[in-house]
Length: 465
Image 1: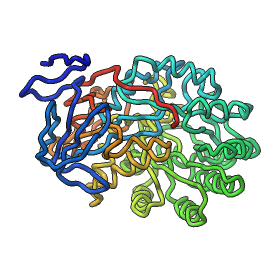
Image 2: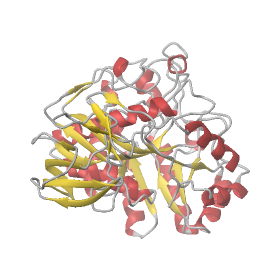
Image 3: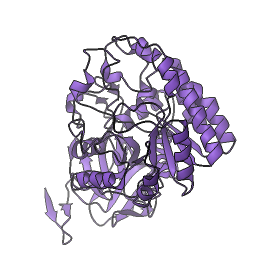
Image 4: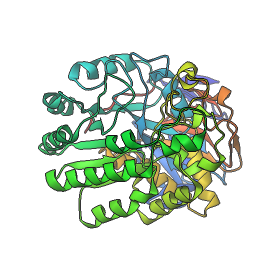
């Protein structure tokens, strides 16, 4: 299938289609996303970057990935919210399986959360352990978040200097003992500390007091689980995050917004000029609480998936620019953890595994609502890259990394959890029908996934610029 160039890189023989592992000199398509507009173009590639953009019929000397005329050529997805869990809980997920799933789903860069690994990434020693665990296992590029927990204020600047993208904290229990939440005083102290070096704090915004006062009914009724994580838990916590940004000037980012009732609060913060951004997730944009079967732990996440009206309001928040980005919050566990309690949703591990299908799910939902795929790409590639300062990612332009995905609307996707690449076969998306598939993924000019095949070992560990 391939020969070897002097550089040692495999290149396709004349007349063959590129396969995973092949190094390209160009990608061309009739619908290439350039500066927010889909148009015919050839992307010329060199040294892992886009070297030039030319007309569709530009001559090319070397291997070319040519997308079908009806397919979209888009920048690779930058997913800034992924739980890889390695080291320590690698049975839940690991760098090899997570980045393979990422490549198959068009994700060329992911940013790994500081929990649920053991040790968590709350010290430079924990960061070093994470980097050791990742080395040699990556199919896509990976950057790392640090964590802010009680007692580690003195670790925050060293972690920032060591290259983490920012600091995650919880305002309510995280679910794991080694990553405790910050109380009001600890949260304010973390904001002041991080503001001093213009860092970024990302917040799991659910209020611990509201959660403590909410009704907790054991059992499998999904409506009871939602009642235990009410809208008010998010709105109260987000009000505190906004107040903290106002008081300290620290850049803050609200994670996995579930409740549309917080949109006005966030819009007001934006109008005030506060440094506040917010994300939502594909599962909040896809599913509807009234259609989730009882005793389905695959759909359990915190904060929870809410009703259809709330879902549509989140789509409206994206259209209006109140919500900045969409990320998967891929948070898998073993089947035993997910099924703990025999259907009791209060006992099951909370988290949706969606890394491989998240982009395709949002593209499907957008298409059914008349939203252009360019907007989806902006929410999941350019804006996420900008959130973490990776200006060379998430866009197709000269000088940017040659990270590309091909989305083919003529290849529908039936999600079969047994065929997904993440480690454990549990996902809320099992059985979902989507209208388009990612058929090719290119990382820094090299094909890393195509038609279900993946090449490993091509990803790099990234640090904050």
